[in-house]
Amino acid sequence: MNEEMPVTPETPDAPGTPEVPPKKRRTVGAMLFDYVEMFAWSVFAVLLIFTFGFRLCQVDGQSMENSLHNGERLLLFSAGYTPRQDDIVVFHLTEPEKNLEKTLVKRVIATGGQTVEINTLTGKITVDGIEYADEHSVLKNPSTDIEIGRYYASLFSYGYDWETGIFRATVPDGYLFVMGDNRNGSSDSRDPSLGVVDVRCVIGQAVMVLFPFSDFGSL
Image (cartoon, rainbow, N blue to C red; front, side, top):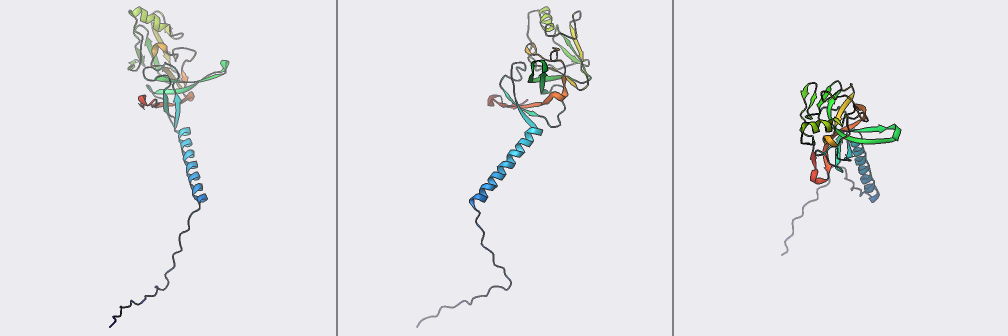
């Protein structure tokens, strides 16, 4: 005797249930367009950041040793930046008579309205009568104070009193007095060929060494 298998009655679809259309497969061209659009927006974002926020710069020369070295590549912060004492800044120097524009990196010693004094016998720096913590600089160490004075004084061609051995300069508003950390090998605000730097020429503050990787780190 054959047993009949139970039959499950078919349940009709619920009334009003919409059919889900099959998903359309995207074409290769559409996916390629999405990747190109994403890449374009990424490039735009990077350009926007580096134009208004960050820039790159390369150190040229030995004037900032031992803080910075020739060939190092720096990350600069520029958006809304206001230079402050002890910052390392990068700025443009234009020499119209030579049709030359250079980019220099120096340390801010004093800002607008401050008075800088440098004792050439000892190398001591004061700003508005307060000793500047000159912990970054590298100074030549001749055998006598007289040799220190003669060597240091040779770097100045304005604002220097030969009787007292003191260089003095007051920084105009809107300008900066800058010096290289390699005090004996830097052409900076002590030299009238550069003098004080207009803050409008400042590109930004050096905040990090990016390359070489052995020197990578914040400043």
